[in-house]
Amino acid sequence: MNAPSSTLRQRHLRRRLHRALVPIAALPLIITALSGSIYGLLLAHNIEAFWLMKIHTGNFGIINLQPYYSAIMGILTLIVAITGVGLWLDGRRRTTPAVS
Image (tube, rainbow, N blue to C red; front, top):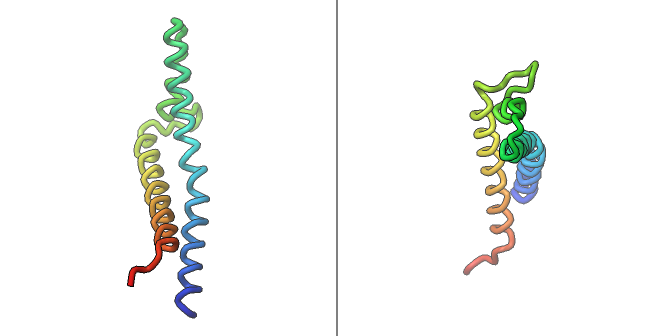
């Protein structure tokens, strides 16, 4: 196998991994941001919606992830950030002209 083909395959695999992980990592972040914002807005109007705070902290009724939710979100965020920066640097390396 020649080097350019292997490099292209690795780059494609990294992109596929990143694209698969982004929705998985974004969903808990979006849920946390929305539930926290909505809870704050409701609380400002003297409306108590403690169930939103439960969702905000990872308690989804039958599935209670509260003890692990922060760690899971942190790890997913780091993985997506690291793979994203790696892809970005890869793209910069390809477009930067070689200095001779």
